[in-house]
Length: 542
Image (cartoon, rainbow, N blue to C red):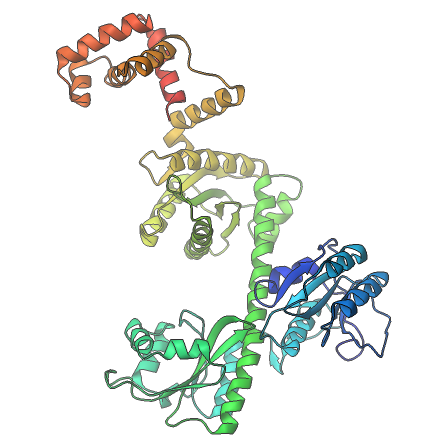
């Protein structure tokens, strides 16, 4: 049974992979089979065992009420003959090899709708995603009678339902939208609206009272009376309801009321939370699409190929002088929390995008791999260095980060070179050189040493000549001739300064120096010998 009036959606843009990317972490889970095709989904349909409609190819089928493994397997095979992309059933999916084999043989992916999510919620989101680009589509996309993603309009609608001023907040108590009539609340609500965040003192107060715990656990509205310890500006009670998609807590709706809601209004408040969930998911999906598009455009521009000029034009950066910034957290040695690092990278990327947009509205930022690249329209790399330094000063040291800065690029061809220079500078910074921001020219010698280190590592070279002999001697006799040699070279042959650096007596140092010359068979007066040894010490050092 096709969903929607007038048949299936035409000219959709979302593939099954895209659907999983946008909804997979919240509503859908791939159980069996593979996402083999990037072809856009032609429509969605609800399975009806008493009706066998012709499905457009590929279709996404909602298996409402399907429980038996045999029935699911038979449907998978039937859908495979019609070229369906996927079948969605309610979690938990029955275990067994039959379903896996049916999914693999039919080529139809089997997906599970997470516990707690409603079929109506899923159908509305899928219909919203697949309707992008409809022929003759005019005006804003609608969800539940409201413009998709317009949380402010939704807040006003909810306020009318419960006859009270409303805020819609994310899981971190940041205000996403608010209704009118806020003057009917108290000063704490006004402060929340102005700061777009529940003040920390009120958040702690609610947490100690168990409000957040109750909100996460309950599907019903939670009535909140100001605790006795609450400041005088928190005087009006609240009623709050969780906004969920399946088991995921997306946020909450808060209404400032003077008494508990009536049963009818309480039900309306709970129903409104389901609609808010749809809009919040749609907003997130749209933001993900925009982020992926920007990432693709920035990546293509930095490659400098045939599509670079068009990508720059779509970013609004065509025919401008650009500087490439390359940002990444200064990853600690042996860091194990990769998920934490990934989250830090994304937060830094978002923060850099906001910072650069304040410098120039047309700036573009995207996270490519583990590096965030910024395209900044400024006339000089010196200006870009100042901008990068100001950014790191503002974000602080909670997540130490480093930024490589490329030279100015006035053409597409120069942009790829500028990216390479920024990458080389960033690599030196990540290796640790005492700087947070640098251009390649600032760290050129260290960059060259790293390049040589790559070359010798690729060939499997080992230390040779005097250095090899000194290393072998130190290993066999537990000596420190290599350390002595390095200190002497760093001190430009000043034995007294080198001895002080190693905290030994100058006579002891001179004895070690004579000894290393004998063991290493090196003429310390020969500049070529000194240079070769110094280069090897840099290249083969840990």
